[in-house]
Length: 454
Image: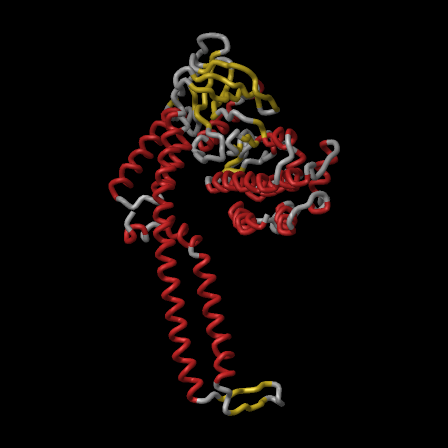
């Protein structure tokens, strides 16, 4: 990788800036040393010719001899020259190692993208190719990567809705999204494509099945929406409009939605199957180290930061909705209660939906919510992971009342954690959303600044 081409890439500058930290420290120490220690040394060798006291004797001014001034100028020049002479080659060596590391990251990203594509995890393949693109300096290679990303996006787009027929708008159905129903061919198979294997879980927003995609020959998760919504045209139209946007979420820490389908038995959507435990089960099965918890916290924040950037708030963040793969990668799942900022929610009027233990005060009071509600829920999750117990317990009504009016014990009174993490969590669970962190990006900045201290 050429130096002149490399300096045009912000990703390489960011990588180099981190590596140059020892050089910055060396320069700072050298400048302070020259400014402070050299005059002290020369003062003993060439004492001041005159001392003068001013301001009632509080300040003493020294007048140096010409010999002192000549020696100071000479030696400070030599020492600054020596400092620069040491710093520049050091910086060049670090630049060379940065370029080598960037080449390694490009190669690693290509390999990850290739593995993800073979496993038909197209969203991860696109993500890794974009990572490689941020470091590549060769215009031809960059063009090839961009073309590859476009092809994968096109393939991903064809996977998202391969079995849906959308009827064009007419004066009679203007503003609505209509889906043509197609019959299932055999029991347990949806649209002659997805074969149910076993139930993975169920809740108020439907049942999730492990299924086999017979076309792409891979395992997927299928969410079957409750039967009571099957004839609710308004609900279905809102769900389909929002689900289409959710299907565009392509981030390594978010479960990817593949397909939205309807047959004679109901409405479904298919998504990436994560072969692993929920964060809830993983934390109960073994005690988590603080380093692992902070790594998980970073991944969750990156996922919700991306979703918020797409104007989507989750509204039901909890350990049960966060899946942990065996390789340590977290995936945020179940956007069933998600809301697009600035749009009407498809939550039924008069109901408060979510999980009381992790619900923000404004959500518990039935108010409209924004990104800061997810920040509160995230902070309650981290509180539970570091202390080993939920912030609030009791009946549903008791917990919701506590969410509105009470603060839990400061985490450090329950578990041994750094002081900064106390403040990090408690600011995240402020009752007044104006006093909380306002964005996931702000939390990530604090987390990354202190992670190395643990």
